Length: 96
Image 1 (tube, rainbow, N blue to C red):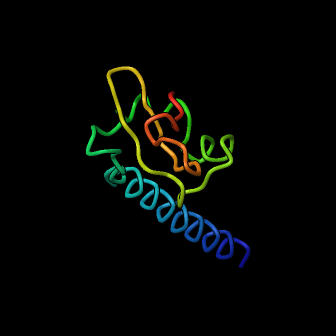
Image 2 (cartoon, rainbow, N blue to C red):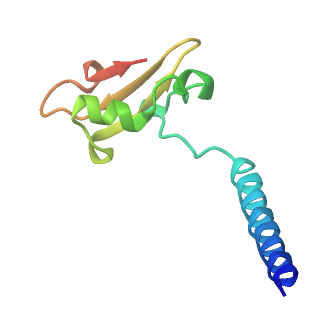
């Protein structure tokens, strides 16, 4: 009986492990989310944007997705634009 119980645990572990592996493989294969380009500009290069998460930028600036106007990428940097009161939008960005 003990042997049969161990067999069931092994099968369950294998089944759960296989599901977790399959889930991880399909998650990483998904394409990146579309960016919100500022002023019809170019989106940030994902390798540049990966240096600092957008959520960290929002948090440190005290801004939210509702105030986010978009991003503008260049060769080595990424600018994130925000709506800040009556300020000129062209000057309300954070560059990473």
